[in-house]
Length: 115
Image 1 (cartoon, rainbow, N blue to C red):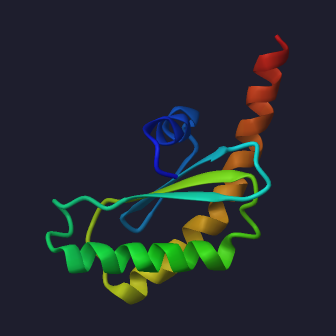
Image 2: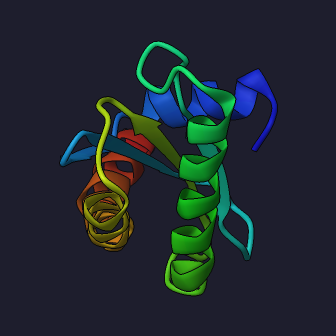
């Protein structure tokens, strides 16, 4: 995801999981494939090398779980600095939980749309 509107729709949906200094936000996208957005702030990771490394790790974790996340927009927001091993574990766990967070939320939205 690259556009502000795409990120805003995920933030508005408010399906959030926080794991080990990373927030995972998810929303349905109406497509057959999953999309990823990343927020890696300069305040937390000061050097471009560190930010790019974290982005590569996030993309790789997403690529490994992409088939399970079909039809979702996922935004990964880094909240604190972590070692690579802990970051990878948190990414794997968080991406798997995105789907479970979404199921009850979509039922609520569907009910509200019928009213």
